[in-house]
Length: 219
Image (cartoon, rainbow, N blue to C red; front, top):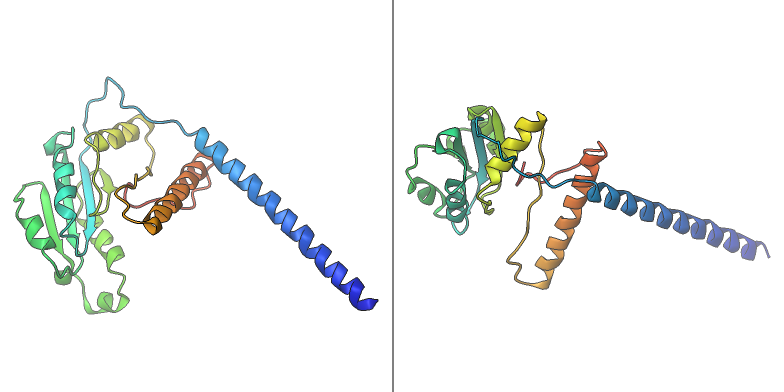
């Protein structure tokens, strides 16, 4: 009898817990959805005239297959070439990443090789991507610093969108989404879905002033 009562209490406790967690999850998803739906899409004002000098910082490691397309998309920006610089920090690449970057020979492209910049203590940390970003930001000349990844391709209005949003609202920090494509298998499709969900949570969190995460590939 005692055992039956104990099992019943045990079952009831976890049933109530499961129901409570399910209700909390539903409320949380509803809240995130509400935050996402209330997030407005930014449009470049018709009167916008670029004026901010922008530093684009990109960490790269073994990105020979992607870095060329990334740089091409940056050079095709509908933003004055004299108002932005591209700082790419190579993180110990073992492929042709460095030579591809050097082949552009553009005045507004700066290549930094991390292996020539870090000291012994920093080598022990082995958090090279963070070091690459830190180094690029320290060398940046722009009044606005924008980051993306070496395997990303940006749309032509990318800098104009960010710059006009910054100038119109004077925010200190701007986070934006990333669109995933070219998935080759089911796992990559699930990964894209997962990242899409996280970006929705990012937008909702920022909208509700609960800034808990964002994607560094569009920042």
